[in-house]
Amino acid sequence: MTAPTFPAPGSKRELEEGAVLTPRFDAAGLVTCIATDADTGAPLMVAHMNAEALARTLETGEAWYWSRSRGELWHKGATSGQIQTVVEMRVDCDQDALWLKVRVAGDGGCCHTGRRSCFYRVVERDGTLTGADTPRS
Image (cartoon, rainbow, N blue to C red; front, top):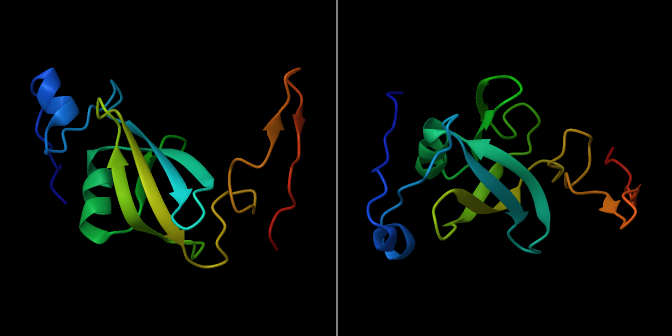
């Protein structure tokens, strides 16, 4: 695939009110992406997309990310069966973050720990973590 390009952000008004996707990738070429369950709204995971991952997501309707730890394009669920089908994609006001509302195939898990969501612990005010749920089997 040739390197996809997105238009450069124009004026502040075009960025915030315009009808053209002009993502503001960071210095590493990434934009933060939050994925939530399309039916319940529950947060599932946070990942990052580069221009190619974003283009493939738009093209296929399935979530693609950039794995910072592996340094490679990542089709979520390609090996686990937990494909994320995008129901809706939103961009924030200054186009430096994306929100995907997804339906997850397979066993419905999203976290590499075997849980439904990567957000399985509560941070208490004293900084301790509680409420870890059990991994799916």
